[in-house]
Length: 256
Image (cartoon, rainbow, N blue to C red; front, side, top):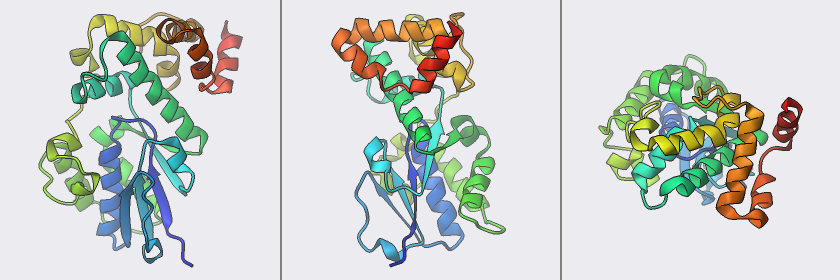
């Protein structure tokens, strides 16, 4: 039986994953590739009639069947701010910020560990052609037609897309909220941004983002562990701690 290529959009939440999900679909459609898409683990019946399946899910165990994992990467502080704008009661105070941030770091690191390909949120926003060309290369499309998919993508980002986005079951105004790079400062308090800088500075620097905190990666990681202990207690602290990649812990210890 023919097995279609399964492309999974996973990794961080509030990172441009919905836009990327739709961009992949539109590139396939525009270039006459038989494509179907689905959310979560609801694998399609009759999938063998398609060339490509596009899955969107942020649950680690749903990525196991993927042939390609695309992992959009965004400044975790912007992810936290976006989550608060969408669900203010969920991301409440210092603890809410920490939980939302840690969850996204964990999702990104797991996606990369499983061979995921990072797609920068900055590129999605500022240079979608670069992202579209990468996707076309993965799909082995010669002389791809990308103008129409990119236009749809940009229209969706500006709230003007009236068709095809509906597979995500989001209302138009919630598909993409015109997220501003570095806009977290307008949503989070100075206390909250300072806290995230200190606790997640080790990850932010590793991933190439600027950090205002002067803490070294090692001291920042210690701050992260202390926050786990303070916010969740000693018993849960160690369970959460071991989610962080072992190599990162070893690297940080050597920097001490």
